[in-house]
Image 1 (cartoon, rainbow, N blue to C red):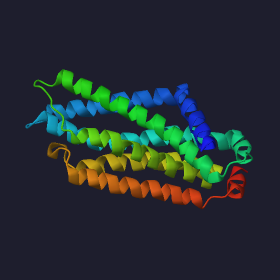
Image 2 (image 1 turned 180 degrees about the vertical axis):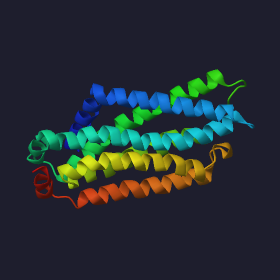
Image 3 (image 1 turned 135 degrees about the vertical axis):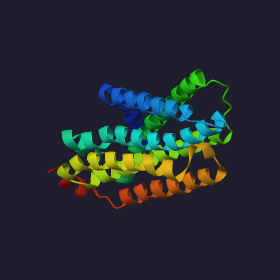
Length: 234
C-alpha cells in the first residue's frame, strides 16, 4: 500500500509540474468548453439550468477522458522513451502496483483539471445568461462519481496500451485517440440531448460504461509482463 501511494504521489506531482502538458490542458479546458457552452446558451428556448446541466454532463465526460489521455501520455510513454521505466521495473514492486499507482496519480491530476474546466464553464454561463441558472443536484453526483471514474478509465486504458505497444505503434496511438475523441463528442451530443437535462438513466449509463472501461484497462494491465515491456523499448 505504501508503494502504491509513493508511485501515485510521484506521478501526480510530476503531472502538475509539467509545464508543457499543463499549458495544453489549460488551453483545452478553457477554450473548448467555454465556446461550446456559449453556443448552447444562445440556442436555448427552455430552462437554461436544465440545458446547461445536460451539456456539462456530456462535455465533462469527454474532458475527463481527454485529460486522462493527456496526463497519462507523459506518465507512461515518456518513461519508455527516456528509459526510466527500466529502473522502475527493477524496483521491488509488482507490475500491477506500478500500473495502479501511475493510474491513480494521473487520474487525480486529470480529474482536478476537469473539475476546474467545469467550474470555469459554469462561471462563464452564469455571467452571460440573461436569467438566473439553477443546476440540478444530480449534476453534483455526476461530478463526484462519474468524472473520476472516466479519468481513471482513460488513464488506465491508455497506460496499458502504451506499455504493451512498441515505440512505433505508440506514435500512432495519439492520432487514433484524437479521432476517437472527436467521435465521442458528436456521439454523445447525438445520443443525449443537452435540452433533455441530466437524468438518472443517463447517469446509470455513464456509470456502467465507465466501470466496464476501467475494468477493461485493469484486465489489460494484468496481461502485461515486465519482459514484454522491455522488448517493446528496443
